[in-house]
Image (tube, rainbow, N blue to C red; front, side, top):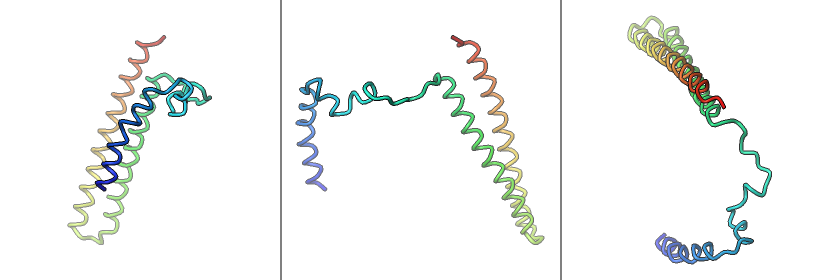
Length: 124
């Protein structure tokens, strides 16, 4: 491992010098100019719409997760066979899931309001 690290440290300055002294035709060989010469579509949406979409996806995923927690609590309750300890544990799971769902729905409403106001103020 030490030999590989030493070799990399010795080789790194020479590679940096080669890149710094590269001719414009050689720059593309190092991958600097890949996006300007090819037809890669990196996205045409504005940044604010992209951020809004990411927030909606994350909150949607969290909503699904809390719904699964509530369902898991119900499953534990149904399979507890009357054991009070298991029923109490299932009630705690369901309660935590409901609280999480309320928090996520509130976060969704707040983010929806903030993003809509942000969009309205930054319309081109």
